[in-house]
Length: 410
Ligand code: HMG
Image 1 (cartoon, rainbow, N blue to C red):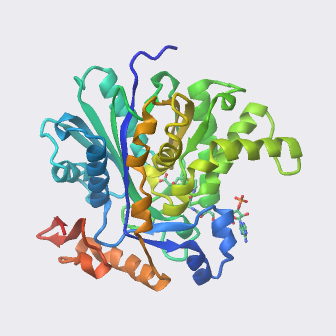
Image 2 (image 1 turned 45 degrees about the vertical axis):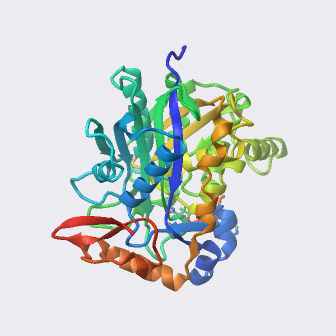
Image 3 (image 1 turned 90 degrees about the vertical axis):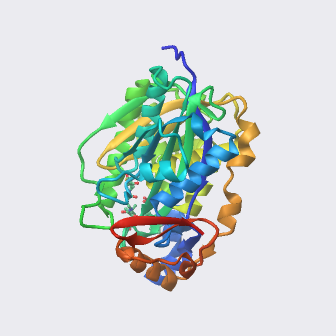
């Protein structure tokens, strides 16, 4: 099928918390071999949000960066969608705070999407449909993924936490990535693999089952997208996945290769195992550095991997085809094909969050645990001082007074 309108990602930016936990420190504190976290899960650090850094503040910072770095006029934004599973209110969407704090045009369609980690992909494809339908009338969409992954102290999910936001501007003639609408495949199934009851700040997960659900969703969404293609990977320069932890991308890539070979791959069979290692080393591993440094940012995890690819190889891979797979527990998934835009290389430096990551503060495990406990009370605190968490020079949540959340630029 021929795609008529080139639609896709025109601008990208990341923003995350100012502090992190080193997983070797966490492993020591929990009495676990550090190799389980670093090699077994593939994670090195996880970003930790203080009570003053929430879904709104991270989304605004990421959105402002995307708009500014790519020279976009905020008046051109006609749709704003925030994908999140870390809402700040049962009714009011994060997106409307973000709309205000970014100073966007009032003539803008604004809403929040929730489907675990799938919310931003839902926003991205909806905004593509909005453009393709002609309703955008030349305007652009701003889609922001913003989340804080909290599993609770001492849980199996604890080393797979993280926090951060990725903002994407979606438009015709995109400067970074063209997404082929006819290649989009979807999947939905009611499963209890991961969820967060209304009474809980912490996610609950049936961890091993969630991995199976993810892999089943990948297989079905891929088949819906491209059918039973035994030769797809050969034409792809990169395969990007939702990354709850880096090892999950390896498992996902293994499943895709198994589908193409029509056989299970195990370490005992040298040839297919080596083929998997080579394909993973070329198509996946180079683009997982940010995920290993930041952790699971839920809705933004797939797009963090995209930022990693574009900041390292946007120019070199211009014109090349890649795949993207988004998974949200519960569950929903999308698999699609995309082409790196011809001018992507010109923007490599603008999307690189290396300096922000370099400036982060390493928390001791005691500081981290205190931060988590303070976070439990944050929604009820009247006055929060960013300086108490070592924060300055940004937009922060400073407490809930008169039942209203307050945000201040310090
Ligand atoms: P676990 O069960 O404690 O870990 O927690 P494990 O025993 O499975 O070990 C993990 C890996 O480390 C294994 O590797 C071990 O062999 C290895 P594998 O066999 O899988 O290749 N290992 C070691 N390696 C080296 N040296 C050692 C060592 N010891 C063990 N000494 C689990 C793992 C992922 C289940 C847990 O962290 C968890 O529950 N995480 C949260 C759920 C999750 O991330 N699920 C992923 C799929 S669902 C999804 O992606 C959606 C999600 O993002 C939410 C959303 O949609 O909103 C989560």
